[in-house]
Structure formats: C-alpha cells, structure tokens
Length: 454
Ligand SMILES: NC(=O)c1ccc[n+]([C@@H]2O[C@H](COP(=O)([O-])OP(=O)(O)OC[C@H]3O[C@@H](n4cnc5c(N)ncnc54)[C@H](O)[C@@H]3O)[C@@H](O)[C@H]2O)c1
Image (cartoon, rainbow, N blue to C red; front, top):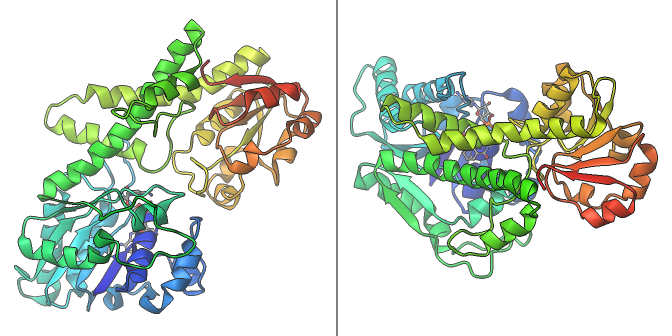
C-alpha cells in the first residue's frame, strides 16, 4: 500500500521504517530540512538501536521529503505523527497537528484515503482533525470531501530504546474508527504484523513465545482514551513504588526486595516497578497532564493521576535533599552527573530528571559536570544555557567531584571501575538514582553509597 507519514520523530520514523520493512511503499515527510537531509544520506536524526540497519534493509520502499504535495497526493493511508508537546495548562499544544491536518486537506487528491492519528491527541481530536481536513480541502479545491476520506486513531505504545522491537512485535494494535471501510484498510495495512508473517530481521529476532498480535478495534474516543489511560497507569505504577520506597527507608526495609516481592505476583507484574528518581521523557509527564486537563473539562478530579504526578516531581528534589544531608553545604561543591537522557538507549532529553536535578544544584551554588554516552550533542544544542560542564567520559565527571549522581542507568556506568572513579574524586560519595549499581561492589571501592530511598 502507499503510505505517508507526517513527522519523522521517534514515532513517525519508527513507524515509517517498520511499515516499509513490511513491504509498503512509505513516504516520510518532515518540515525539518536537517532531519530529511540526514535521512536521505541513510543517517538517523535520533538514536535508536538498530534503526539505521532496519532503515537500510527497508530502503527500497522508503522515501524522505519535505514536500507535502509529494507525500500526500497519492497516499492511501496518511499517518500524522507530529509532536503534541504540553502547554503550561497541561493541555497539549495542537498546532503541529492542526498544520499537518491542513496540509492533508490541501494536497489530498480526492481518491479515498484514511488519515490516521498516531500522535497522542486529546479525546475528540479524531473529529477535530476530520473537520480541519474537510475545511482545508474545500478551501483549496472548491468542493466538498465528504466520504472521500476518514479519520482513525492508532495510538502508539513504543518505548524509546526498544522502539523497533515494540513496533515489530507489539503487545496489541489499537485502531479506533467509526466506520467499517477504514478498519478494513488498516487491517490490510497491519496484516503482516498482526499475523507475524514477515521475516524477522536477524538483529531484531522475533520473541520466542510470540503469537498473533491482538487487534483491539474500537470507536475513535475509546482508542484515544486507551493511550492516555495506559500511560497514566504505567506512570502511577512507578510513583507507587517510589512512595512505598520512602516508607521502606523509614522502617528499615529494602525497597528493591519489596519491589521484587510485589512484582512476582502476576496480577501486579514486575515491569515499571523500579524505584528511583522517577519517570521522565516526552510522554508520561505530558500525557498525565493532558488526562488531568481533559478530565477537568468534565469536572472530574483524577486524584490518583494527580498524586502520581506530585510523587514523581518530589523524587527529583529528594536527590538534592540527600546530597545536602550528606555534604551539609552545597554552595561551592562540585557534583558529577552520570546520564542525561531520560532513560538508557535513547538520546531524548525531554523532561529528563537529570535536567531538573542539575538546575536545582546550580541554583544552590554547585558546579555541575555531566556525561552521557549518546545524548551529549543534543544536550549541548538544547541546554547550553543551563551552565553544566560537559565531559567526555565518566572519569572526567569524577575529576574533583564531591559526589557523583547516577541519573541514567546506561550499561557502561554499571561496568565502571569505582576504584578508578574514586581516585579522581574529592570525596567518595555516590548517589544511585536508579538502584542500578551493586552496592557492595561500590562500597568495596570505599564509596558511601546512597540511594533515593532505603
Ligand atoms: N516518543 C515516544 O516515545 C512516543 C511514544 C508514543 C507516542 N508518542 C506520541 O507521538 C507523537 C510524536 O512524538 P515524537 O516523540 O515522535 O515527536 P518528535 O518531536 O520526535 O517528532 C515530531 C516530528 O514532527 C515534525 N513536524 C511537526 N510539524 C510538522 C508538519 N506540519 N509537517 C511535517 N512534519 C512536522 C517535527 O519536525 C518532528 O520531526 C506525540 O504525540 C507523542 O506524544 C511518542
């Protein structure tokens, strides 16, 4: 099928590359010329494991363009995968979505087409996008587009860092649509994925127990709500274990053992039950805020989600509180930060806890040095004004540091030789914000090991 993707960010590019790998003819559109230039050269503007490999394998079916006319005119399915960043009120900023929908209407050829919202959008956006496409088509073509296109919701559940595995081998595919023809088109599009009939790339093997992928077919509003409800649930699972962590610390319990003991219960499950400095990234903060904002339009308080958000915000302050308790005076201290990305295996810095922690420490008069294995270029480009000293290695971060904080659990930090790190530091204090390190191994190297709780 002929497919177009508007927006080649973490979601759009992954979707486009995977659909091209499945055999569809995919055109990826972005208005960022730098990104399209890189993609045309076979390079990816984001860091995502195996993305360059899959892109190379799918290249006969992939095109990249900045020209909306070229992308939209002949497409049978157009995915909208533009950003929906938060506004101060919590409601998402929909101007990129609006502009994408206007382009769809403007360049739509009139042959039947399905417009798919892949961006995470507030409930009701399906109807809204339909109206914009229709109005834009009438404005530019002087006639009505009724029945020539339809709008579907196909929320995305990938995790950065494992985006390709999540996309090729998803737990489910959710499609929200209010008519049978749309569902038929998207069923045809996703059939190889749903039936798992494609040859797995050797570098992304199919999970052993993988069967057919369940298709959850719903109305538009339900699909839109599924996305928010799923992210909010995962976010509150993390906040729940962090709240229990503070009690664990006070009563002398080990939160890691508590989390394991809880998570082995299959009704609960051990994923997203990792204590630490809390969630970051472009989704959980934004989507929980949007859920609260939407609910407030219906006079619903969403107390559980609000509580999860406050617990998460507090986790970042705890790091600074703990350093203050240990060092007594923060002014004039040098603090090293290991890891800037919001989680390992991505270069994404959006809402990364490390940024808030660094900002807070700098405001208290600390000198902050930081390193990240892949996010340094993004950090230098996007956060030059923060006042953090960028380092080429963990060892350079340690040089003269009064304490080091592990903020992102990259594998290379787990493997550090803490004797060598300790020799460079002014005092051997380590705050493990992710419970990622072997406490005993670090203690043997003479470190005082501190965790977020317990
Ligand atoms: N990143 C994730 O892990 C993730 C997971 C699930 C869902 N989502 C949702 O998917 C959506 C996209 O997220 P992302 O992280 O990929 O965003 P992103 O910021 O990485 O990518 C968005 C891209 O859209 C482009 N763009 C914006 N307006 C455009 C226009 N009018 N025409 C063409 N291109 C345009 C931008 O240049 C950018 O490259 C968001 O709604 C997000 O909430 C993200």
